[in-house]
Length: 348
Image (cartoon, rainbow, N blue to C red; front, side):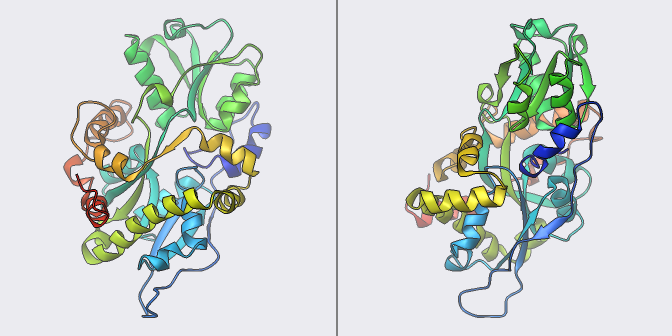
């Protein structure tokens, strides 16, 4: 199962104790496309999103009428399977999608013309390396077996932890399993450790004596999530890209001012209770305008998108997930975030 399809896939955990399961599902459009406030017959931007706390606020954007209020004409489509949304953008069936940095680099390396225009969030605890009782340090992972879905952000997180501890990844045995099956194998005692994201983190910790060794909170910036648009949309309809970015920041303000209503909307879209949604939301840091401006700046650590992209690109090449790194200079376009900041009198 790919990175972000966890809410709708939790039930699969119980069926995956001994076997690997596939949980990619077909996309489902949301209730109806939005329309421009001026009544013009404008072709909507077809945008996909899927289950991750950093992306589900887009449901609030739609239901609160914030796309229209900001001049965006959007056909917002929900995908039960995150991988389906990636494939749809690559195939030209979407104009925009919500994606991780890892998956966007992989898509661009395969020839898709995609551009990151907004940071929705960073994972700050929802991705974890969980270990059995006898493991007390990263060094203790040497000679042990770790179940993780290869090529995912949790695989990347594991390698970051090993690197920080000065451990050669060859000293650890990787058991490649779909995320739900990896958590199940760990609970069943078939592996010594596991790399998973919420809510499979909760399930993995049901193993007696198990504990978190480290998480995405220990590696700020390592797992960013984005609004990604096709280069065609960027070049032909930049005003709509701007309107979508403006709508996102309007949504953050709306959620802050209408928390009860907003959390009801988000929990319903996720298929969980409000209490459960708040628990998972706590491990995700939604990016403010200032966070966005800082992330797009050059830097020498993972909090800088350009630096993170280089590191992730190397990871993808080294693990034979892409043949070579694409031109990462073309991956980011910060003009829309900067334009919004200028409109608010907060440009840096």
